[in-house]
Length: 184
Figure 1 (cartoon, rainbow, N blue to C red):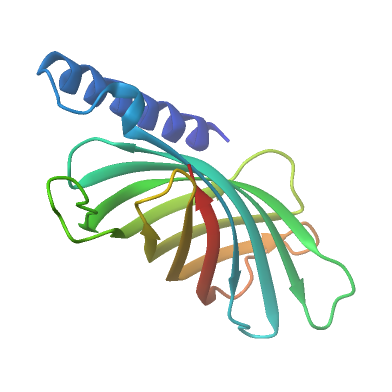
Figure 2 (spheres, one colour):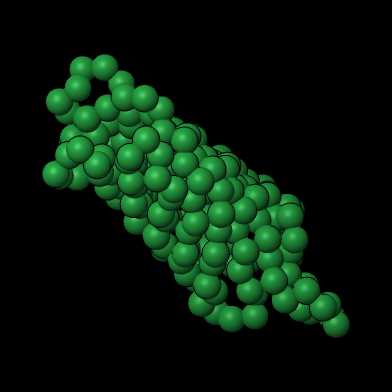
């Protein structure tokens, strides 16, 4: 728990320092326009008869034209084939993203879509019956010409955890996933 609070505090301070620096340099993008909010669902491949579903919400902050910070909160459900109930966890993720292809619709630009590369690390927070850590990397694709942008993502997630009945950690979970969501 201490580690998660320290991670969130570090991301917040980094975001605020980058915002102050860009505001002081007279950046072309206003501070409020650098934030975006995302909600979505993530479902991955079946691995060792375990199925995981994640509901995600969070925000991104553009620190430059190429990079952005990620702060997400997830609600996770895991079910193994041999068990008749779900293990739940609440996870806080932080990471870094890169704009590989940035939309350019101003001044006659012809690219109305964006493609982002994301990498994040997360850990469970609060009282949960499934403690886990996750490391993920993925690509997100979304149009840039609307206010509410549909987001489609693909990626890989490595998760390592245990439930409240097992003392030792379970076998690591390698998962390819597809995510669907909205960006505001």
